[in-house]
Length: 169
Image (cartoon, rainbow, N blue to C red; front, side):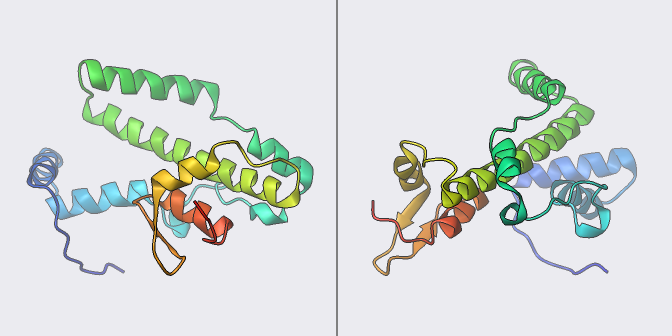
């Protein structure tokens, strides 16, 4: 089931979607919807194994392993190659999609890793990283009511929920 919404998007993005739609014989709306679907997979189209147990349900050893995890070496190398090529000479449409997919893998891995680090600190398995307050201060603006307004990233939202928005900077 599709739900109609109205978005305000940059003109160049719409032009690119129209151009890609013309090349693939689809309308711009379908191109944008497909791109969004690729960026944020729904539960119905996630590949097997992508859903992980809640970090809070993992053993101490699993928490520490996840907290120390890194992106697959081959994927990480390809991500770096695509980023460098994009800066130097630009990317083809296929390479842009590949870059988006690798960035999604990287971001999901970092989120999962940060969840594990927060859980390790909560359980007393690790000490908080030095400088975490400085990092959070860059990501949030504190309000007078003690709650934080997150400055544009879901990652910061997640961190603030872990620490209960009870920070004194």
